[in-house]
Amino acid sequence: MAAAHITSDTFQKTLDEAGDKPVFVDFYAEWCGPCKVSGPVIDKMAEDYADKAVIVKVNVDENNDKAGEHGVMAIPTVIIFKNGEEVAREVGFPGEEKYRKMVDDALAGAAEAAPQAKAA
Image (cartoon, rainbow, N blue to C red; front, side, top):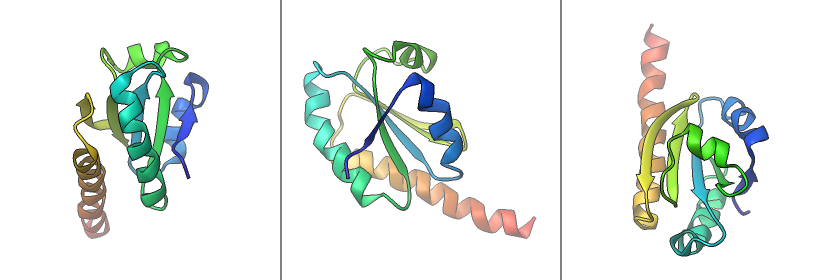
């Protein structure tokens, strides 16, 4: 299962429908060399994290309004959103291990927040 491609029209809906799952958004372009390297990694992560996180791609050439709205100045840029808010960002392709750590950290944040919510 490859990462879904979303557009400016479906961006907010994707964040809203994720609930408390982290949303890993890869801002990329077809012509970008590092994006071509990171693409298969992100597609594999979409499969590996299918039940835990939402992993999607946004083509900046086709959706430059969203790139601008989120301050994407270079690609690839990955932003992780949680409950609609940005919680992590990485510019460039740091490797699969770093991307996975970003998602795992966002998931751990969810696990830590859950017991506090019950106590309140």
